Length: 252
Ligand SMILES: C[S@@+](CC[C@H](N)C(=O)[O-])C[C@H]1O[C@@H](n2cnc3c(N)ncnc32)[C@H](O)[C@@H]1O
Image 1 (cartoon, helix red, strand yellow):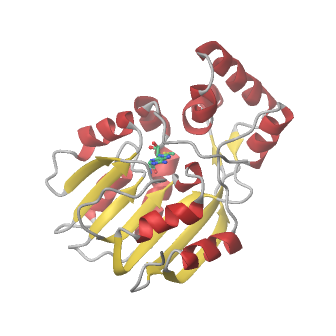
Image 2 (cartoon, protein in one colour):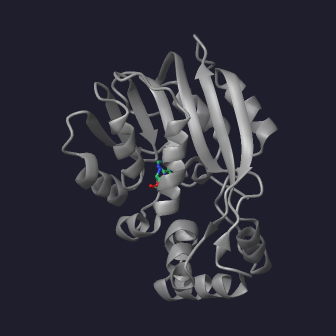
Image 3 (cartoon, rainbow, N blue to C red):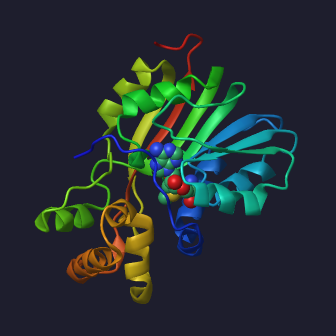
């Protein structure tokens, strides 16, 4: 189950080395959006900035606000895209009202929103920074995501921090936050990991919150126990996909 946790730190270097499949998924999301060259776009949970960099290629006269809750991620994104005058880097928690100077034409978010509890509140925070008629495009973990890992954690008596939402509750939360033309769907996107990278992947991409809450030794033990119980080194990702448009008046 979920509870309210603030954004935490990530190992940005290791994440960058392991995140190629997630970047590919983020670029696939960008490919389904028709940006105008001058759009101002928020990358909500930009991580190391690889999807922000691909976004910049689509916005020759536009702007990217690359926002993340982890200082290490923001620093790493700054190293990648910070020299570009079209980029503003922001460290902020998506669970709180967002400190943007002016509204954006669109928000994109990849592999992030399942880390943020209370989606109704999160969607209100996003709606508040999108101009009327602007759009929201999301890929994140959805109902049934990494089911084997969730089951293993349950068997080990561990809770988890993820908010793996279903279609109907997401549609309701988006409508309540003032979004219209809402399209929400789940899709399977399994990712195989090299066996010798499985523990690193678990520690960095999957179990970071669990590790942040225990000693390094206890964290390593948990990672090993989860890895040893997985049937194959593969994550059966189920993605929650969202396209929506902000109505002319934001719901309060
Ligand atoms: C799996 S990474 C995805 C990064 C990038 N979008 C990508 O596709 O590679 C998840 C990111 O979400 C950020 N994040 C998680 N919870 C957050 C929150 N409450 N506020 C802001 N960022 C958050 C993390 O710091 C991390 O950079």
